[in-house]
Image 1 (cartoon, rainbow, N blue to C red):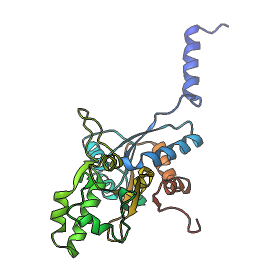
Image 2: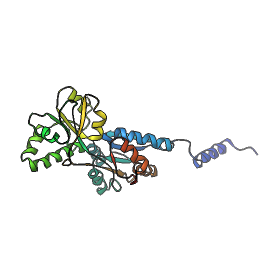
Image 3: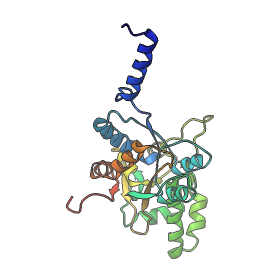
Image 4: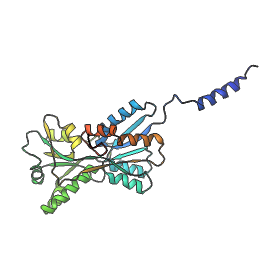
Length: 270
């Protein structure tokens, strides 16, 4: 007996629904701090090589600004912040699952290659009234918050340093994106143009952007260490949780090490 064309179409639709889909799943959408752009780009590439059926997209920006967008309803699956505190804030508000530490980053100063400064003398250069220094934007970007915390710590041994440095520091990058204005110049471009003498930021980024005309100088132990936090959205699917675990896995942690971060999840013998 011949099968009616309508029945054939219904049967085909049912088989298509029940069979493993050849169509890629909805992408896992990652909101990540700007300092993670290259490292997470490499992690995503390795993830995709292992899981081509589970695509991942990424949007980068200042971590504080990204957190505020999530608080205002921005959809996301995974949030990767340069400050663990931001991820914890979302978790406490019920806007994310548990916040976990996934990497650390030291603070460095970027200066011209010929500047006679070392880790032992860099704070003296920073404190000199004539030094023009640029930082990221506090509250919007954790990099600025870490710089302001450094200024507070310096004030203990050098009373008045906090007031002087916060008044002198130029907040030149890490602010909320403004579609009406061009992207701000990088710290390297600011130094090359002679606009500033020193830029404070993460060692991972300073190392990548130094080039031959600039040098990155690690700040001494007085400087705060950046704790990076990861959290998964409550409504995210299993693929988002799996990607977050990949970031925490030895494979993901090695990529972070390769990009100048300090991993928190590698075996002791590595």
